[in-house]
Image 1: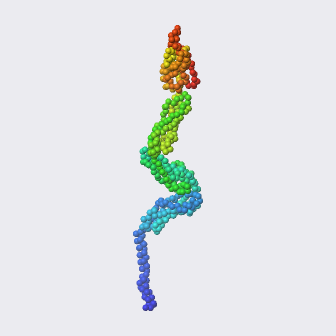
Image 2: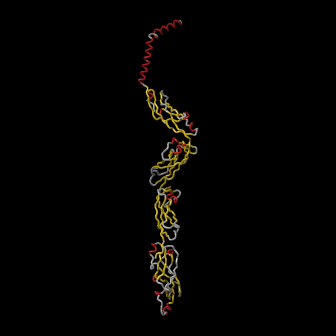
Image 3: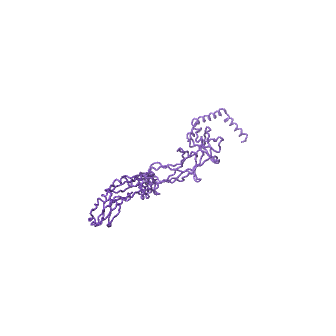
Length: 457
């Protein structure tokens, strides 16, 4: 078949089949397309959905740090936005399917940057951010070295206490905006020790506090130690056993003249609670505190720091940090005692001799110094005055009586010296007018002592 005949056949087919009623056919196609579009939109319409509080990622922060400054977000840390698209797509979207970011390298002269939101699923949707902007404030970087402190909450088990903390690192270099660094006061960590019976370790993020004791946002700062970023601080908590022990005192020294210590003192507390390892506590049964009262006048009082007298491996647990002691010192007074001659005993008169007083008086004088209680018990009759004539021979003697009931340290002035004559008994019998011993005369020779102490007679 010739080409001319084939072309004729094709043209006739197109004219009779395709082009016949072409207007109706085009219209039918248009109606079909429109019907499909209407049906599709009824089955899967376009809808919108609002998402709230999506956190904005900050990009290119080095653009700020490179000029030795830091930024603080004034507005735009989160963003609300609306999504428009097919219902079948939009209804399945969650806020986590999106990412929001702002580029600090694109800051405007008023320190603002566009916030852009993208869908991580690459869906055919429209995202409306309402032209939200990230607004920041810039200021110079400042640093401050801060020692880390530890506080505890809860109570350890009975019979235990919190001993030492080992903190690594214990000093942190804090960097941030100058205004925030100026407000920074401390870095504290809080450890829960409730029910603890043994030592343990824990880690925590450093927490910054301002001068009013309020927690500061960690986003304001970077923490470092020896140029290494610090994200967590290690804390080793030592838990010790406790023991209640008595407090004892060792009093030494001599008080001022005219005062005496009679082994009387009172103090508080009388027991304290200490803590340490079981081995250290087993060796400790009490605390002995030395007190020197040398030169003290009147009652001696002192507050003694308990820690100063504890072994190095034992710590004070009691709330009391000091023991208050009062050592009682009594004022010495002077009393004059008159000893009746008849109260002086003559002891050990040699055989064959007889004793008599020469220049006899009715009484002799002595002075004692002591407390009022000590002096009250002494009278002429109970001081125990005597003269020992042992080994004496016939003749005349000047002798000072002794008092066997009076301690040596109480004498301010000993009894006066008396004159005694020892005679042969036969000679006495041959005397026409024998002298009766009771009528003999004592000539006392007092021994005065200068003293500012008041004399009581």
